[in-house]
Image 1 (tube, rainbow, N blue to C red):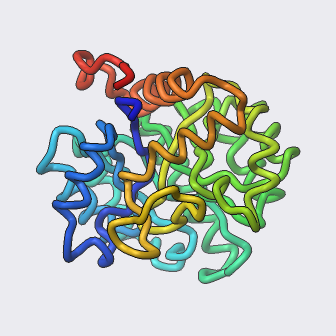
Image 2: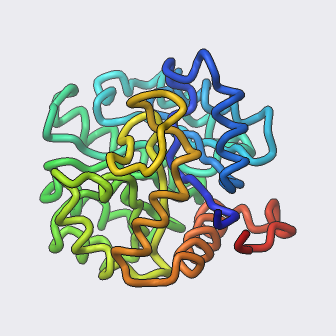
Length: 275
């Protein structure tokens, strides 16, 4: 076990955790996951993430409206989001961005919601937790227009092309890596690309309960459900793909997460170590 680790993307409010949420948290901590950032994907979900985060010192939250729910981003939703962003436990805007793969919300609504949330992040001096799928050509110029006003950005669950990766790195974005690289069917391109990610721009996440690593060497607590306790395995596989020492990757991703979410003071006594 390498500790500490930071899981920057956990959908802990998801109903699939309702029956054993406390056990999920206990397993994560036992595995060395010392920080979890709970993802908000709608106003209601952001509130739920915040409520969960308020109970534990190692939990924080994001607040935002996912592109799937962009049609719901009206004036009342915007006002509610502003209230959430003023909460000390909320450390980033998002999940926000564009998803032209499923188009659950009309594309004009997605672009409007994305731009407004980027503006809110700039106003509140908060980093942004980004989602992009099959929308790079529209996503990039919208992000670029705000990038200089934002303290930090992470392209969550990156699964794009090499050109997309370097476009984001050119904008000084962080890159979120998940268990997608553990998928023998779909993760080959990502496995080939991760050596190109500078350690200073690397963040790791499970995106629980989604994206269960398919090559886990042990039986998961709940079949077909991902959880933060699997993050050490993702870091292990990531280090292999990067041809780097596992401890080096763990320490870099931990330090990056604390800096990204402005949590260095809260975790000043947590020293990276192997054990």
